[in-house]
Length: 257
Length: 198
Image (cartoon, rainbow over all chains, first blue to last red; front, side):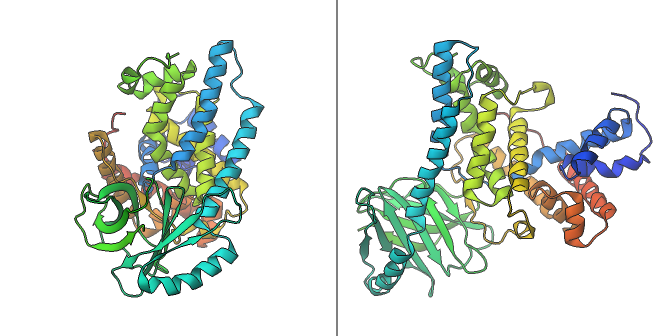
């Protein structure tokens, strides 16, 4: 690669940003890469802008990956590591069996989230009508799954601070999801944070922070931590990034009994 | 390779670059630590790009398995492990976007995104990362709208300059110019930013 800087008037300088952002076509990308080897001015420009492009990923809102994603990846990795230990470093770590595992996992995942977050149309319809009746009393109801082997999903209506808003917590096998509608957006600089409170204890923070869609105030929020009977799920508004103890107003209060 | 019966405390204290040497030899415990350190940033980037939970999970899974299987080779001369991992995730997400039928203008909007943030700041590094992320977001958001938009469409949306030009009804040269100018301005704003340790 040439180390000589060329004048900043190189016609290709304009392509530097698009090149680093991956916005050139494949042919243009190859062409610019070839040009870079010979043009000191473009090399310098790319080096300078690369620093910025490397920071762009962290501009994305930070989301907690689902724990079962780690489980799926580590299942494959642990199996391949075991194989490697058994057969030595020449072992082929890529196995067709893993691909089968992966597709099975994906199907299982879809079923699980599907069952928890998106009840079947018939169940959802029934749930909606029952919730209207139960919502007044703030009670709970049980929605049975079609499959006799699937754990039942229990749904709890929550007390909501703002008038016209609704919040429902669905729990299946200790895994909970919160569904809200018509909830105002969290105040500027704040997010909603989910807390779990066990009997006689202070609310414990969860990793789950969220905001609602601006268009309809809705959100479907899986709660990473497991929950149990008799516990309360609270939502407060907290400074961006969350808090270790509640500091904001309680906007949602769901008693899981 | 690490003996699974021995405690992995020493590994936890190791720098990413040293862990990657173990990963190349098939050390699954070292890989697990690399995953723990970079999975949140990876998933966040993948989700921001695909705007779909399942697609984001697939992108992260493909990227990390590629890293594990040494299909992607880490070269410490080319930057930190974090930058390298996120580069793999970005490329995989672009591939996924360009394969998908839904690669259209709708994805250019943030509408409908459910934002869920990592709440706990367990270490000083995590606190620092949050501040760093805020600084980068601010630098991006305070760009003139047209510059911010072309950078977001290209980097997070996976659109080419000609697609963006068509979408915004703007000449290609103008789109390229906005990308370069926007990145230049961000570089000045972020001049003091240093990459955090693992």
